[in-house]
Length: 298
Image 1 (cartoon, rainbow, N blue to C red):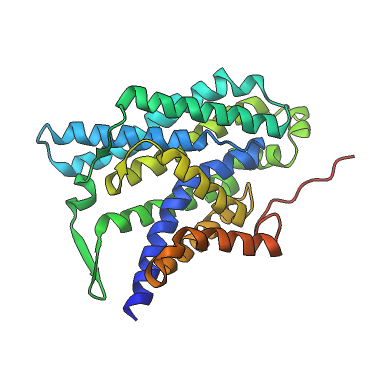
Image 2: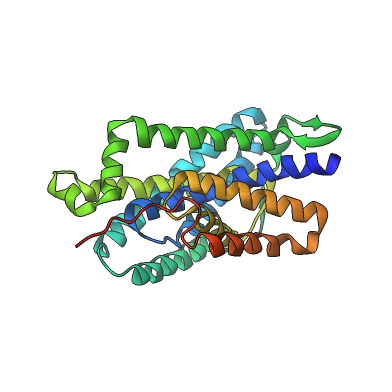
């Protein structure tokens, strides 16, 4: 019984982290058809910015509760600055090129961002534990969990609802869905496709940075975290269907519970279980569970 509860809570926590880290990746692919490997760099920038700002704030002796404000602020600044720089400085000159070429371009940007984090923050690890332990722990059937874990789950739910509302209930979201369906017809109808591309890429970068920033208090932020998350994020969006926000949520839940079950039942298979689930899903649904339908063009 306790093992089932532990798998449920840990699975939800891991799924929330994965959803926050991968939803920006699937959003960018859905709108721009770019498999953005640089997303791992945005995640790392958010994590480093958050850990550095929280550490600096803690040295002032100010109330720790206000350090929570630094997490979204760090994500916003890191994602906005890096997303705008990458989209306006590089990608806008590459639109319309082959998708494989775009993968190589974003991989090069990812490597540049990895080196940029080392130049700015060095190669040592950053630990910003204060927010994660500020609210203490809560017992779930006598198993203690940090309250911060449930804050991350709550933030993931809020982000998912907000994205659903914006995409389906607002004029901007409906115009974006038109761009996703057919960018040529959208441009012919007078929709500023380039502007939608810029905004989408920046929002995706901010979401990637938010995934890193909100995770920073729970991990040791060190070089290489961007490469780790991009592999897991690809597993999530491939399972859910590339370009689908709902698919990213379901994919994150599947990977989260598979990983939590492995950790509690057979730890050596922790990583193997994730890719086993991905292979099983792709064997039945080659384009993922909720892949967006491709419009047939003549």
